[in-house]
Length: 231
Image 1 (cartoon, rainbow, N blue to C red):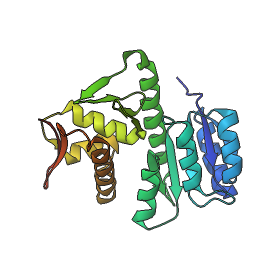
Image 2: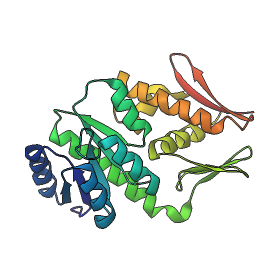
Image 3: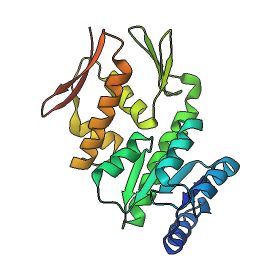
Image 4: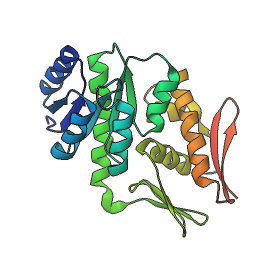
């Protein structure tokens, strides 16, 4: 079945944007293009895309700022960064802002399409299962994996999709070792140093969300992975 999902591509390099658009449309996707961050923000609201591809270096409104703003209104939409930057810190910043994935230029079009398919498949599967919402009680905290939130009696914290996926994976292996390589392959599709560093960032953020609940902790098992422990 050919997907008719609409993709919003925000890219100011016209040749690259044209190549991506043509490649995706040849596979049945609908593609809207914005050439700067402000136009991208407007199209995000008007076109209601299923997935966004965002270049980091955009005129008028940079990709980091745009993704931050998108995440303030939509916690679930899959977001992929395109970046020509070589600094790992820049990509980590994008992931921390809520992007689900990144592609470093130059990249393989086939790899981009595979990542889009994987993110859309996961997103569609989650939408299909909204009525069977998975809710976990973590001591006095309540984790809703579909609403992407951790709530206490006093406040609610919102997670990115990647943070929610990682916490869910830890919970599914509660009190057991979550093998680092297995987690990377499941959530990122690739086991490499950069993705491992990205996962470390998310683990740090999850610990901040859970720090007020003493009965729950995420332990690092050196050289092996992580373990979510309930006391």
